[in-house]
Length: 240
Ligand code: GLN
Image (cartoon, rainbow, N blue to C red; front, side, top):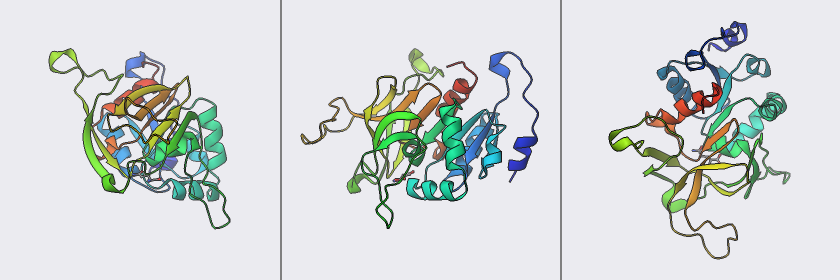
């Protein structure tokens, strides 16, 4: 791992915003962090695995990968990472979370799992949303679909960005989002059952942004869909 290199790295030289190099940490306690490291490298950024609190020091941004949020919660607490991470996110560190990463960034989990003593899983927070885990149900444990996604710049034929090809794996959705949260993509699924007060008749929220925090229910890191990582890099640079 190159993680120790990250803390020794000199501060990036000031330059035009669009050329400023960025160094991104990827939380590597569990899950598909390698795919995120690859995606950042493919875009010309540098990235390193983060497992220790000191590895948070020199980062321009952090990615929380897909995986299993309950395991990430437990490991981050036992590695002493949870508190420093919470503080960095609250302090404005740009963060992108995919799938389990979205759950870890949510301020509220609708259906948290509980440990043996009945304590609910914890998150780092930072996003004023309520997420529902495994929300698409057993029938749709994993599926792929094309989504309209706001805020992408790469323009294709006809002047519109092509839809994002999104891979969902036991994915959460955002059931409720605070006023400051921008909805970037919805999954145009069937309306929610009438007993769910927070049902959104226009579709399920699957991508959001609030300030420096970006999150998706799906996994752009697994299928070469680099435009979400590109957007994250633009957020880090203050260009989006
Ligand atoms: N269902 C998982 C969780 O609750 C997330 C799945 C994923 O990241 N692909 O953490």
